[in-house]
Image (tube, rainbow, N blue to C red; front, side, top):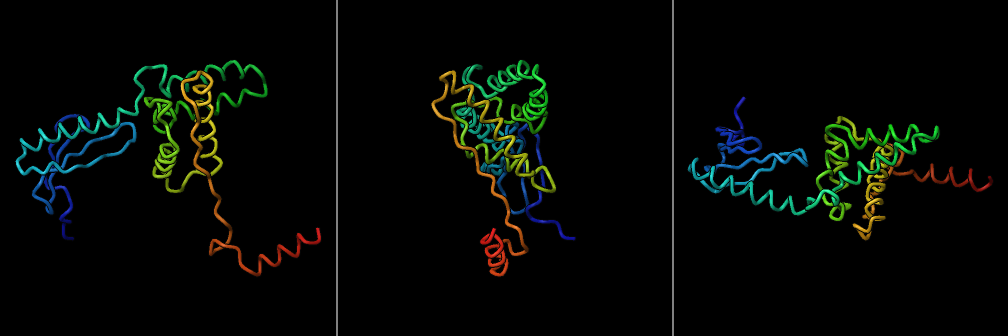
Length: 211
């Protein structure tokens, strides 16, 4: 089987989270950056054919990328998502003393502190005032990509609900002025075509008409 021209011909690791590589399609070296927050690689062309010069440009690309990403990070601990998430966990400890709420603490803590996919792992460093609906949508897509089948809508709604509770604490403290709307979870319609047939619609109409 012929090797793809896009396959990496030469890879040079510069340091943890940063490497350069070259493919058969382009004479230029590419910088590959690992984003630990989004859990994915970002690739940028260095526009350099010389390896030494490409390494220098890769370092510059990394710094530029970090500065743009860090603009959404909290400048102080008490503005971070992690701060309010842990505050919510502490409040849940008090609520869990009631028999009706003992499962709430366990379920929410799982969503908050899950090692790779938890809310603190993903949003922890972000400023609560800079979390947007789009970021939450990206988080849900991130979770789906980790699985053969997408998460159930009810599971996604629970995660969105916990995010709202965390941001509500920041709102009550006057740190933010508004909570961004959570992405709507739409259910797929039943049926092979994804729509309700005319016959089915007429049948349902007649059934409910005389109830």
